[in-house]
Image: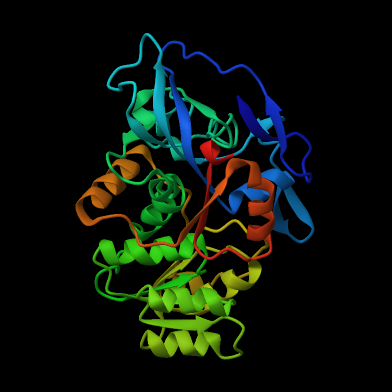
Length: 352
């Protein structure tokens, strides 16, 4: 089987080959049908996150061992099942929830694997789906997609559950406008799910005109160019004095400053994106204005189940998806790094 791996941080993924593994215990082997390309993969390939002020968070120090096969947005067909795996059958098309914990700690026992401090996430700390086959450790992380197109379902594993989890943290979702910062793959997914979850209205902010156009076409109440000198004033005007909720899907110093400064008294800033940087804020206004700053990291297994039920009930989020052969993974990542991707690119191993 082929597998595209980070062998040296900062260099293109390398195509390696190894024998196709056989599942043991509760393991389930999937033949990969679709693997989404996520912006986080760029950080994983580089080997660090930017903490601002010249500081970096090394992923190898966090437990990422090289070589590692990237790809955490995966759909595959079950081709082999371990002797202790229950509830799955050969031939089923499954979405693999990649956010896998240790299974023993308090968060894992609460079904909050995404908050585990010793995660084994597919495509991060264990081999992912940029390969012909993918091993999933337990059927609890698999969700039957039925007749859904694999390339459309795959982004739900990260882009979908990540934005779904962030939207669930917005108490004013159905009563006040939500500001979404970023109109890339995450932003357009967030916008689509916002509508499916009964959101009041959405205002989308970005620096790229084609992405803002895509957001407007996808149903945003309004769009704001973050490069405009009066961007914060525009947001305050559109939200009648300030935003009750800002979901930042970029996570840069600039986006954080804009999002935080756009809040109304009692407002909530939810940061999701991992672009990198820092934010300095004065402390007294936080309690005086009853502001909330909250991080949101991917989603839990129950949230993935909720999302899949929502999709089955209301249909797939209408997000642009382009497909490319697996062999084009490095070109796809280069295009994503250059900001040339609108929506999501999904790799298909069978195509090359």
